[in-house]
Amino acid sequence: MCFDWINEKLKKLTCMDIGITKLCVAAFVLMLAKLWPPMVSLEWYWYGSIFVVTYIYLILRIWEK
Image (cartoon, rainbow, N blue to C red):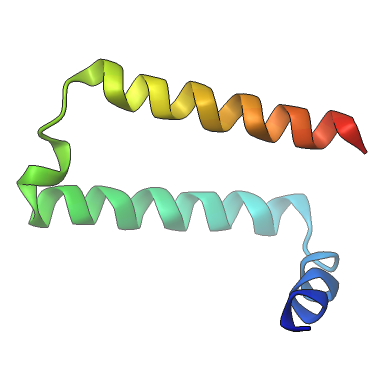
């Protein structure tokens, strides 16, 4: 399936590549927030909750293997 192809490509990435990808995504999200103000109209704790839930999910996925 196409996910096998993507997984093979991801295995070739270095820590620097992953860091640059994170920076790219952060810049894109900030651009969206600047262009579309309703995106940031939620209270701060909603964003914090989303962060905590996704962070816990990622940590559990990392430690389960």
